[in-house]
Image (cartoon, rainbow, N blue to C red; front, side, top):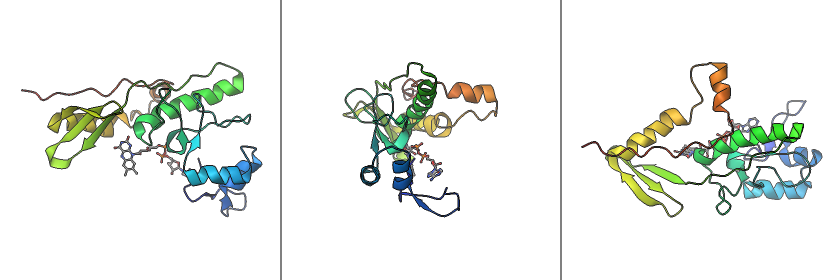
Length: 179
Ligand SMILES: Cc1cc2nc3c(=O)[nH]c(=O)nc-3n(C[C@H](O)[C@H](O)[C@H](O)COP(=O)(O)OP(=O)(O)OC[C@H]3O[C@@H](n4cnc5c(N)ncnc54)[C@H](O)[C@@H]3O)c2cc1C
């Protein structure tokens, strides 16, 4: 993943190196083209999260822009970064061993805006239709920020590996006000 400043500190002599130079050397694109990608902030990837070209480079998360439903580009969010990471990792291995990769296909989009003591607003769809508000929406927000975004905390290798399965989770539950 390119560093925001376009620099890496991983050179053999320990000093900073230009990411564009490293990627150009790896055959990703010309140095000028890599610099353009970094300036844009994101790298356009195909439906399998592969950077176009025949160099076996994949990108996921905030640094990549993929069409998640054939129409909308991925948003710099944990909602998209997490499945992108799982599927990109899977597809890297498929690429190495000649297996069929999995396309990124996320058929829903939700947002939950935390509004402090008042609660939160849960919206559905790219036009952000309000579905749940107040304390109930905040409960869902907490479920995401305190549970869903973390890998299993059990330290159980099998459970951690299972959590890396190349799947897209169902939308977070809509918790409605208890009356
Ligand atoms: C304050 C804040 C609040 C947010 N809240 C939400 C939210 O409520 N909901 C939501 O959906 N999204 C939220 N986001 C966005 C979400 O965190 C990101 O979209 C998501 O983390 C992107 O995942 P990523 O794996 O692409 O990058 P990151 O999670 O940023 O992971 C990149 C990793 O790469 C490491 N790294 C960077 N450069 C190098 C290098 N040169 N060598 C080695 N390692 C390197 C970094 O240290 C980091 O660990 C929030 C972001 C911020 C900053």
